[in-house]
Each structure stands twice: as C-alpha cells, then as structure tokens.
Image (cartoon, rainbow, N blue to C red; front, side):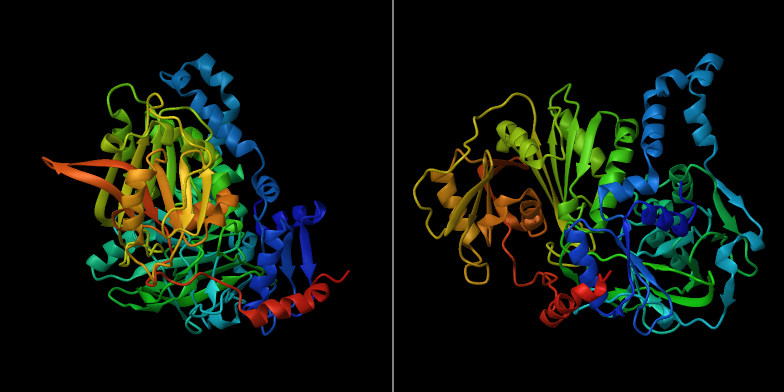
Length: 586
C-alpha cells in the first residue's frame, strides 16, 4: 500500500477525502477545535498549510472514518491474516501440495520485514542537524488545560538494552523546550519495560522519535500485539512490502527512510519531570505526574516535511476508528493465541481498556472463568478493568444485545468476581491513585435463568429523579450528585434488593438520558467506576468465598476527585464558529 504519507495524501485528494485550509490557523486550541467539528460530521482529512508561527503544514484526521482506514490499508491485510489462520491445520505438517495451494498468502508473509536503503534514497535525510529546535514543530495544544504543546502521533522506537528486541509505541510527547520533552511511558507498555531495564543498569536508553511515514507505522505502534511480535514486522505486513530503513552514522537505530521527521536522543536514568495535564482519549484530563525525560540530540527531516497530528478527547475521535480496524484485523488471531476464546472485543467508547467482552468455550463447569483469567494476562489486555464473558455466539460490537445475553444468564452468587488492589491504566483515575485500581469479571453462561424486563413500570424510587432502561435487564437512574450524597448508591442498593429484583443491573449516573446512545452510556458508565469501590451488591462471606446477591448497582456518577471532562473553551468555540466559512472558502 502506501510507502509514505505523501502517497496516502495523494490518494485522499483523488478520492475527495482531503480538504486544504489555507487560512491562518493557530496550533494553540484553534486547529484542534476545527478538527473536532469536522470529525463529528464524518468529514475529510484536513491539510493546514498556514499554521501561525510555524513553517511546516499540519495534516489531521487521516483515519477519521472507516472509509479512510480502508483507503489506507485496503482489504489485503485482513484477507491475509484470515487465510493464514484458516490454513494452520493444513500447514502442520507442511506438504508440497498444500504449500502450493497457499502460495499467495505465504508469499505475503515472506515479503514482510525490513530492508536497508542507501542514504540518497532516504528522503528523511534531506535535512540533518544537531541544532535541534523542537519549538519549530507545529505541535498542537488541543485543550486549554493541557500542560503545553504535545506531539500526538509520535512513533517512539526503543530496543531492550540486552536482548535488542525492539518496540515501536505511541507515547505522547510534551514539548518542554527546544531540546527536551516528556516521555509518557505508561505501565505495561514496551518502551517502559526497556527504560526500566536500562535504568536498572544505570544506563541511558537511546530513543528514536519518528513523525510521519507509512500509515502502517501509526497502526502498528498502537496495535495490542503480543510482546514477542515486532511492530516493524507487523507494519511491513500491513504495508505489503518490506519497510525501508536507512543507517545513519553515530546513531544506534536505523531510521524509517520515508518518514517526515526523525529525532534521536536518550532518556537518561533516574530523571523525572512533571508531565501533563493532557486531555486524553478517555475524555478527561490526565493530571500532571512525574515521567521520564527525552533529551533530543539530533534531527533529520524531509526538506518539505508535513507534520501529521491527531486530537483525542471524548469518543468518538480518530483513535476510535483505528482501534475498530485493529480489532477486526486481529480478531482471527485471538483463538490461535488464546485457545478457547472464540471472540473478543474492547470498547473504544470506554477508552478500550475500561471494558472488554468475550465469547468463550464452556465445556466444563466455570471454564469461562479460566478464559477470563487468560484474557486479563495477555499483552495490553492486562489493563482491562471490567470483563464481560459469555459462551453464547453473538456480535460483541452490538453492546446492548451482548449485555442482554449476559444479564439473562448471570447468577451473582457464582458469576461475579471482584479483584481489588490491582494495577490500572495510567489514564484511568477511578482507582483513586495513579496506576492503582481493581478489576471485575462478570459471566453470563449457559441457559437463561431469568426473563429480563424491558421497561420500568414500578413506583417512584426514593431520591431518584430520572429512570430509563438501557436495554432489557439494565436500569439507569439519576438522582443526587455524589458531592451532595456520596452514600446514595448504598441507599439505592437497599431499595433495589427489596423492590427491583427483576433488574439484575442498575446504573446510577448523573443524567439518565445517556440511555439514548450506546456510545454515551458506555463512556459514562465505564469511565466513571472502579469495581472495588463503585460496584455495590449484597453479599456474605463463607470460607473465603463471597456470595453476592442481585441486583448489582454501579455508581457511575462523577466524583469530585475525578479529573475534569475535556470541554472546548467558550472563546475558542466562538472564534471557530465566526471563522468557519473562512477556513472552507472555495
């Protein structure tokens, strides 16, 4: 497919999927608000050619619709992975006739890898300097409480200090000054592991930061691959060809030859600096915390470099569409990597890590729970906060139907497991302490054990101002704010235990109208509760076993210790509204 960003942009122009904005636009808040409005309308990619105070154009919204994702990669990667998975039984043991029948997908695999090119065939080397000035980059400040400008599509390459196994990850980069940035290495991510090993040895970790290049690199950096699967190889598979790299003197890593920018430097050991806040993909600000520091020593770039960026915030944003594509692409591999798991889905509306659903095999009593443990121990899935599991084949992306299947079969005395005091996604603050939280597993297996109510026809619920059903069996209510009545969920549980037994799940929120949209419901409920703190159920303990009774109550109200939601500043909203026709003047 596309060997570089330019090739992709050319295709988007031909397809009418790229809009150029020549009007002057400020990278501080204004550009991001334009982007957000366009993506909300499923509009085109945007090329800003007149960025105030900067000499490089900015392109955003490259992957902001399913169609543009399809244009970036085409059907070949999905077809190739499915063909190979479907043929595994034919390849073991390999036979000449079988290999011939599968020659096309196997040739696709043999084409993966990297290849070295000469310096004169590497556009990224057209400009090289040790006089680095990161403040010349048109890095965006997307939200007004952000700690500064951030590189939002950074491709961070590191190698293990001993084994030299590589990692390509997307860890946000806050620009502090001309030569220094933050390095937001979250827990349980590959670059963080490499830094941990280097720091144990009191060594600096060499880092290469790439911006731009083949679209496949961006997707590979985000992909939740098993730890032993190299991201550069995966990028090559998406690309359909070997990835061109170029060696440079006095730098330990080869550079992506077709990149727009590359920066080389080190992350020194035992150095930390405050990083953030940042309005992230959970739809809230992640707060300022101490993170490692990237000291930039060299820069390479194309002579006419284009700066790609994205904007994150409340779903659905651009990262949602990349995540959806990756799930479709990798779903055939789940039963291979984790036998017994038939289907798996993480919900982008919750920031992906907050909620996952799975269809598993249940051939003996509670086999489903063993598969749940396997999911929570696999790669980035280790960050999953709440996991719903069934043995009924269904479309996991249709969350209303999936939840109904689970709730019709859920038996609280045996099918709910809360695991307190675990690690948590760095960006998820529901656990009350950075990187700390809990996990929950809820099974809905076997035959239905209840008929689920669809609408609430009962009397007024004390203290409740709104009542709605999200789906059969799931009641959503709103009442007093958490700050006014923090114990209201316990009161609601006492009432529900006596009067709402037909409803296995009750969600307490600030505004019950979230039931109008599956996206709003998912974002509201699952980004605002920690299983150990905010899931309420009657229970008793017998010989180390907790036996829960229904219904369950989830307190998903905003708590005063949660970070603020991201919201556009009023003057910026007014500015963009006033200038809208100027941006898109013919």
